Image (cartoon, rainbow, N blue to C red; front, side, top):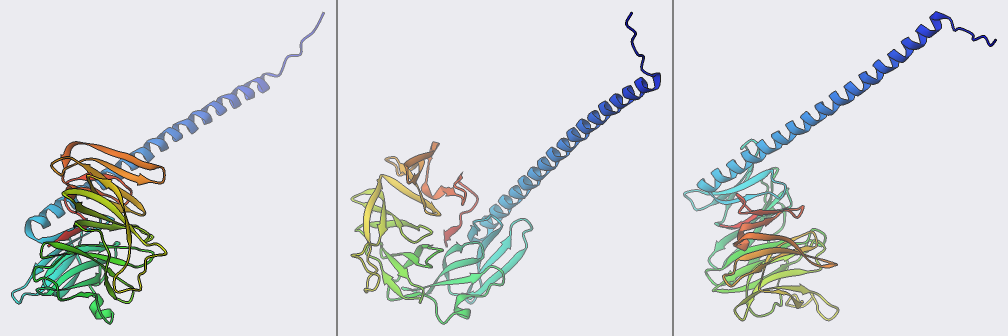
Length: 329
């Protein structure tokens, strides 16, 4: 007969206790994991709610500023806004406010009548001023303290002897080369100027036609124009070749048609964004141009003006936003 060895009762109870303890520990770990997941989810939701509330506040602040002032723009990062005031003596001031609080950060004072405001990154602001009819200057100031370029540099670019109704329409620049291009409308025609690092000014060789918009790539290799050619709005690319020179009285560039019946929307980094337009000149779809070809970004449900379409630094599209990063005053 085979005899079986019986384990002591204490050992069996100990093993059951250890198994129960292990089960309790596992349940406790799962419970705290679930609790931590809930807390993280709640924190993320709270953060989203805070961001949404700040975004709503910023939009309301921008709308209020636009109701009261001219020259309202928003910085590329969405943190700041500008607006313009004038005093009885005819001098203008550009104010910078922080959108989440509505408090003023700085101001640039004693400016000639302001025609144009634009952002140079998130730390400086371009200001196009009219010294006198037909004589314009492109000033800049720091957001942090309002200090102006004509106070810190020997000079600022001045565009002289133009038509009395001359206006700065658009400024674009390269963050890598520091080249600046300025579009000026004078007497119903347009001219593009290049501003070098030493504030030298040269007219740019452009194809015939009225130019509505300009935008430059980050590397400075390409300058895009929206131009009316033979009654049709086209987007063209300007570029330099070994045969062109910037050391001549004119800043020489060759050009190439990018897209006909199109509106220039933006250049983000080195990527061109344009819109196809209908017979009424309204944008029906937004495209971006990549090395692999043109990609559809969005087909618009309702056609829109190009001036009402904003492209963010991440490439997202906003229709009719409260403010743009640049504005004519």
